[in-house]
Length: 220
Image (cartoon, one colour):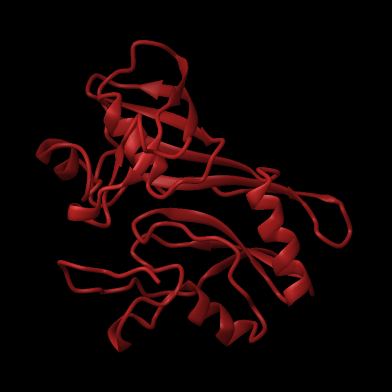
């Protein structure tokens, strides 16, 4: 379970946007500020899954987004789909693209970050780079546009470590704006929320084998 600490949990209001749904699965947009699954305590029961179950009582969780991150998530509608989709994520057969606005101007238009990550236990839920004990984590990035003090980038994670994109961009000196856990006081204050959105999700449908490719425009 995700635990929200250090601040009151005030989830956003409004209906969850559904991009695709059939009897096997659904692809939806999680808003920033909403937990993917319930946190610890009754005050953290409102989450994406609880809202979806009001619409589709059979939904099952497959993966998660950080509470502060918005964007596309896929959920299963029965156990067979859940197993197949979970396997696809584990085998890295799901294509994911995120959009973010980061501090500063990157020196190149494209690049790849290979930095192993591990939980920063004394400072949970933070993660950190650890070249010795960390788990493999790889992120490719591409600059979409640049301004004087910030850059809009597309991020493509090959692996799916916790906080991977947030830690990687911070580690190369370009923290995501609005990130409450990483970066600097100025980067945290530069946006009203974490400017990180899951914009594209593509995978083979677990029962028809048709390619499902959903795009969600970043709301910032």
